[in-house]
Amino acid sequence: MNSRVARSLSLAEKTGGTALLAAVPLGCSTVPQTAAIPLTLFLLACLIAPFLPRWSFFLPLISRGGQNARGVALTFDDGPFPASTPMLLDLLARHRLPATFFVIGRQAAAHPELIAAILAHGHTIGNHSSRHDNLLMLRSSKALADDIRATQEILAGMGIRPLLFRPPIGITSPRLRPALASLGLTAVTFSCRIFDRGNRNVRNLAARVRSQLQPGDILLLHDHPPFDEEASAVWTGELQRLFAYLAETGRVVPLAALIDHPVMVAVEKQP
Ligand SMILES: [Zn+2]
Image 1 (cartoon, protein in one colour):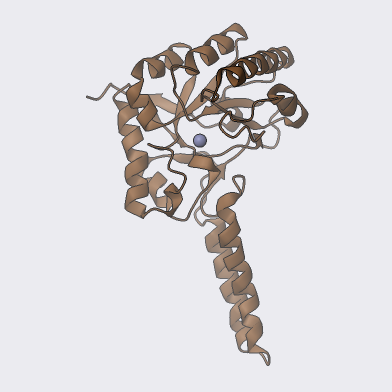
Image 2 (tube, rainbow, N blue to C red):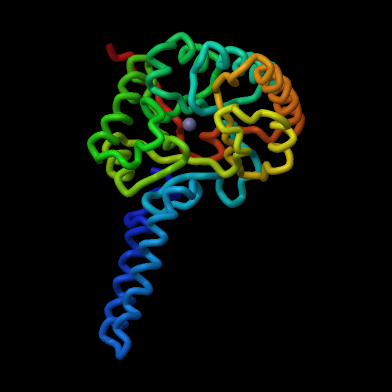
């Protein structure tokens, strides 16, 4: 396992233990009510942690390249779709850019030809849950593991086993860690996003990425058709501008190289 993710205790466990250790002497002091302070801070951290996609609080996760990384990696979530994936593949090929697609199991099952096309173009594929249930992290441990496993099984039928899981909307929970461990998956989020809201907001996409992208970043974009024809034309134009810029900089590297962790492995196609 990658040394950056091979840790025994999560930050939540360490912080919880520290809060408890701090609370005991405070509880025995002349003002025992102060024992509530470290415990309350810990509770607050637990409440905000799920919404901070770069914070490895509940489980070790990768959100960007290592400290000395100079490249950036492109990732596209939520596909595949006939109305967006082929166009993306064509544009990426034209600019010779590698990408990783974090796919939805249900979409993959409906469009196996698009999974085959992504692989044929030399890109890699990660697991982004079965149905993109935004409340997935609130489900039971079993429901969470079943959802992630279902996508692994669909993709195994297409000859690949993803080694990376990206949680829907970047939200994590303490239940995610055992679910991923049982399936041999590592959590990956992102360090640069432009709040395109699944391609509902594509105006100035290229300029927004250019102004924010830093060396070592994992860029989050979406493989999802915009919601009307006008927005689709805007999106295509923005991607052309963005890919031309990225190709010129020569900074884009495969995600696996950026994070020093494979995205997937090939397996024998399972029925
Ligand atoms: Zn998503």
